[in-house]
Image 1 (tube, rainbow, N blue to C red):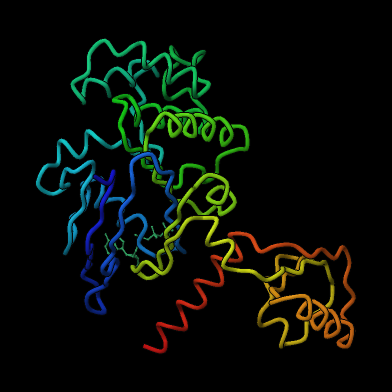
Image 2: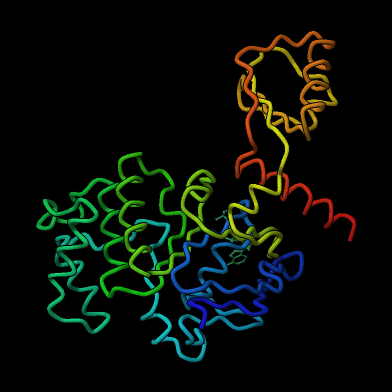
Length: 307
Ligand SMILES: Nc1ncnc2c1ncn2[C@@H]1O[C@H](COP(=O)(O)OP(=O)(O)OP(=O)(O)O)[C@@H](O)[C@H]1O
C-alpha cells in the first residue's frame, strides 16, 4: 500500500476568464519511507495539491489516499496519518510553547504526550523555549514550533510545504537533520520547495509539476544523469552575443551555458572569443538539479505550444 496515492486528480477554479484548471490529471504514488520532492514554478499547482491532500480543498476529479484512507471519504483517519507543516506562520499568542504542543496533542486525542513533546523540543533546538510565550519568539523559533506542532501525533506521513522560505542557515540545518532522522526511522516525507539544492540533497525521487500536470517523475539520480552535458560557468561584464544569450542563465555577472559535450564547450568558448566577450573564473561542471529543472520546464513549455 502506498503512503500517499494521487489518482487522476484535477482541480478547477472558477475565474473571470472561464474555468482555471489548476490541476489536470495528476497521478502518482509515494511509497512508505520515501523522501519525495514536489517541484514546480510559481502557480504550477503544488499548494493546491497539498491542500487537497490535507483535506482543506476538494478535488474536482480523482482520488487521494493517505495510508489507504481516502481524504474525501475517511477524512479523520487520513488527517491522523498526516503531519502538515504549513507555509504561513499561524500561532496562538496566548500560550507557551509547551502548552501549544499539549493543546495540539489534545486535538488528536493524545494525553500524556510530554515524553514525545520533550523529544520534539530537543530535536528542534527548542528545549530552553518550552516555557516562553509564543508571541515572544522570533520568526525562526515560531517556525520550529510549527514543525513540532505538525508532529505531535507522530504521523507516518510528513508534509512540508516550502518549510525553509526565508529561514536562516542554522534553522535549515536543524530542520533537515531532524526530518532526515525521522525519515530514517520510516516516516514518509513529501517536500515542496523552491530551493533545488535542498531537493537534490534530500529527495530520493522528484516529481515536477507545470501548469497542473506532472512533466517529470523519476529518481533524483536519474533526473541528474539524464542531462549528460557539461555546464560552462564564468563571470563577465560584457553582453553575450544573441545566440548564446538565448541559451544562457545569467545571474548578475555570472553566466551559465549548457553544452552537449567537449566539442560544445570548445565551440562556445570560440564563439565568446570571436564576439569579444572577456570572461573570468571559468569553470566546467556537471549539470545540477536547477539545470535539469529549467530544461524540463522549457521543453514542457514547447510541448504545450505544439499541442
Ligand atoms: N482559491 C483559488 N481560487 C482561484 N484560483 C486559485 C486558487 N488557489 C490557487 N489558484 C490558482 O491555481 C493555480 C495553482 O496555484 P498554486 O498556489 O497551487 O501553485 P503553487 O505551485 O503552489 O505556486 P507557488 O510556488 O507560487 O506557491 C494558480 O494559477 C493560482 O492562481
